[in-house]
Length: 66
Image 1 (cartoon, one colour):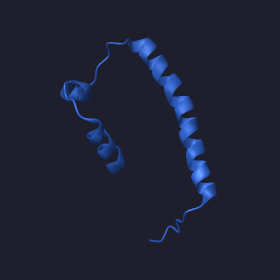
Image 2: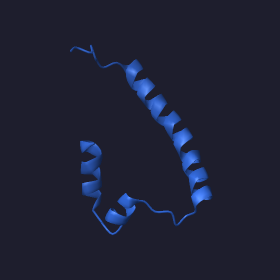
Image 3: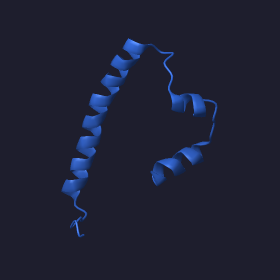
């Protein structure tokens, strides 16, 4: 299946625009969530990986991979 994807500055601009707009929605939503559940909220993933520590190199590698 050919999706006819190709590079363009217009497309890159839309990507940046949607990314910044997503931050303007996500950050206030996270602040509201923290205000509702409190700063000590936890999740199953947080309990499993909460003690894990890594280097900046690993963080960049995971970011690039994902």
